[in-house]
Length: 238
Length: 225
Image 1 (cartoon, rainbow over the protein chains, first blue to last red):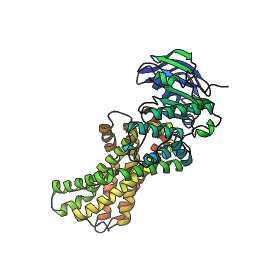
Image 2: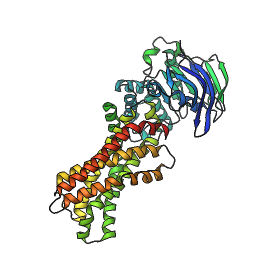
Image 3: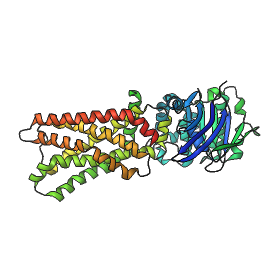
Image 4: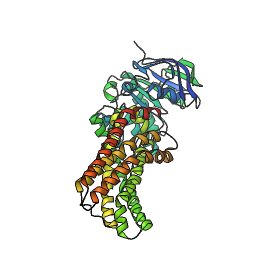
């Protein structure tokens, strides 16, 4: 089976600075991969490249069968990328935000409402304008907008940031359910202990290149990975 | 494409309706501009009546710049620009949607300003009304289309607040000329409709060129700026 992500000697630049300096990486279907590395190692750039938001200037990059940068528009419909920002409009309610992003990505209002339920966004918050939410509540709403899109590839940049303990557990379960239902998940995190519980593989970056690629055995697997109805529970997986 | 454009336009209009920025800030700003023209030039209404078409369109132009800037500021506040790209929305639909919402806001502002000009400068706007309406609509498109192009270009840069006026104001000089001349022709006693429609032709060509340009280049503008 073709890998979901196939990168060969990929170089990307911001201005003149090479943020990715010859990346080689293969990620298969249903894998959950942790990107680790110091600040500036290239984690965010790698995620943005895989989302079709950062163009390679040399090398070969194929994601979900789309060769980049030519196939980036078709790719974007199939990928869910959550960066440091949550992309919420302060003057729209949580529901309006999630519904807008779902519909913009080709999903339905029902998908959006299901994602709000799945992320356990409290009913009282759904009609609150996003500008009045706390950082953690905004993150949860951003995750709901992402899940509503039915991505085949989840790209999460510091997804736990700002979330409380319950929300972190919910996020972990969501990630594992998505992988169990056939999606691929690549996440960047500085919270290595928590993230390692989720992943089957850790890719370490430094200076825009891969310096280590280790298979890991999750030491505390969550039961949802083996749940028979996981695919039903996750609204975001095609 | 039309469904996506309608989705984006609906979102932008909803954001504007909720935030009330246009109602609470841009409208008062525009009216203050009209008042300041009155103070600066002459309290004599005769002179203000003569200069009213030019003053009106300068006030519209300044308001348009604020509205365009606001339209893109909403997207840059919490990573919306990247998120819009990441949805795979057709960039042409994005251009049309944002342009339609901005044009709707600007038309509402133009109506308020028209009332202001009528009251403050004593201008009778019922003369040559069809010409006023048509030239006003064409000029609105002529302001909004380049506004979207330069707004998108500037929004990806750190110097966006200062760069946008520098790019936008010279580019829309033909709109200012055409719209002012068309309004002058409409408000003349009796109205010079033939002359006015010729200026409408210029406005139409300008609007068509910039709209076509926007549909073509909005994608590289979003991707590369």
